[in-house]
Image (cartoon, rainbow, N blue to C red; front, side, top):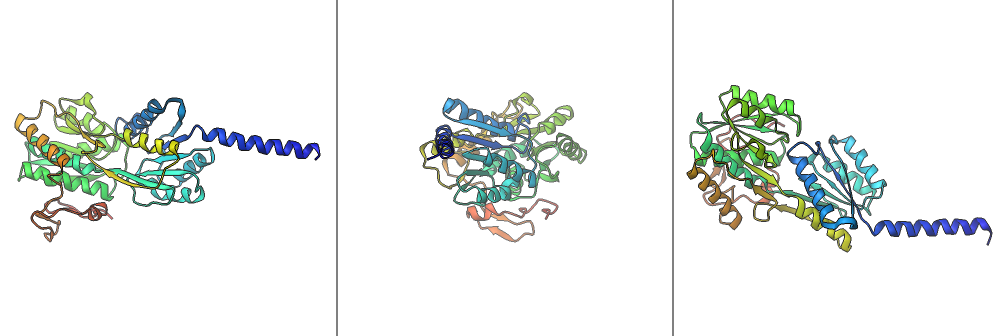
Length: 356
């Protein structure tokens, strides 16, 4: 055997050993649609990443890339992550769904977890939270807190998750206040404080005095604070705005899921799963209800939360009609997960159209 063959064999052996060593310490990546300092959605996903680091210590390595646009940019970022030796990659926005599927097909040995989507593969899991459960509670509070009988909803994109949130909020606002009306403003962004602030002001100009937001920044609460209206923390507690304008919040708790799925990588038993958890599991939390809320309304909201946790109550329970007045759910009938997962219509009483 000549010296060239010996050296070549040594390099190959070192390469194999190096790969085996690298696999001893899994590399876990996170891709974020907004900045980690947004105070909401991305902030709490990053809190989950930090919980992974705290839980596993030096046994794993985590990385993240923030403010990645949905679409082609996401596909490039995911490809680079896969090429750089990541074992598991969490993609944390709905618009990353197709990029995740596309890149996963090219890297079958890399595991992917996509948040809020519906497409899976052998190496792609999906996970989401039943945010609509939390929005039922905050919708009830909104109905109690409005003095003008007008509440508003700042909506990001017309996807089922957001439409479910609008409907759950309105249904339960009506339970608290049969005279309530809801106005929806679509901003077509997850994180843009300027647009979110403009949408908040537009709703206030329409006479709305309580606003729910399905976007990621604290801008709506900043505008509401100056205007004297009421709002809610979105994806994070945003407690710095309590006791008003923030009267409660929906909090996303991703840490237990991220720890569980990282453990599966360490144990070598990761498989593709579909997870959709809510308040009962702790993936959705209801923030403290502030003392700006009357005691009776607070008690009613807490009772609703507890009934959802126990399974005694489902936020989409009939009788409920679609926006055109046609029957959707009969008295006592509960919406199935398939319908909720693909929801593309408003319930009766909401004005305007769902955008295409």
